[in-house]
Image (cartoon, rainbow, N blue to C red; front, side, top):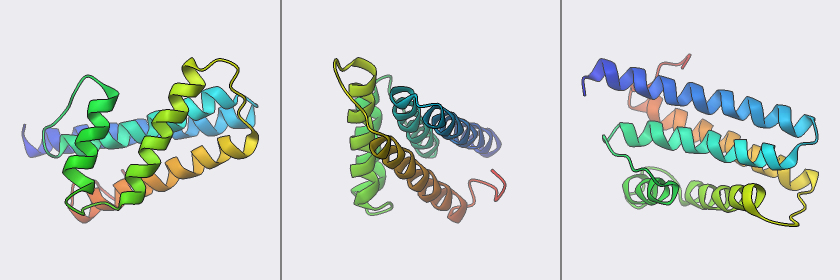
Length: 138
């Protein structure tokens, strides 16, 4: 993949992350906790896809994507372990929100999920910008 194409893909994925995070906030404000938790996870997921693009990696499964994130970015120490924990927790929350029965999400849990997604995306942006792979307005 050319460097120009890579930058375009990273920018697209980070735009998807930002848009999906906005959707999570809107759903939270509308008292739609399940949808908000799901969108918060997907915001993080799109940011991970941006990271994986830098190494031309990908997989069709969410669990595989998370494993690649851990292997390629957390284990070598490029990104903090807290981001791995946040991503794993977000995935579990999303699974419960989307498929769980009789799951009650309180407003505090939904807000925490969104806040963790915000931190995750900021950290990924900083990582990508430090490597000159994402412009400051991307």
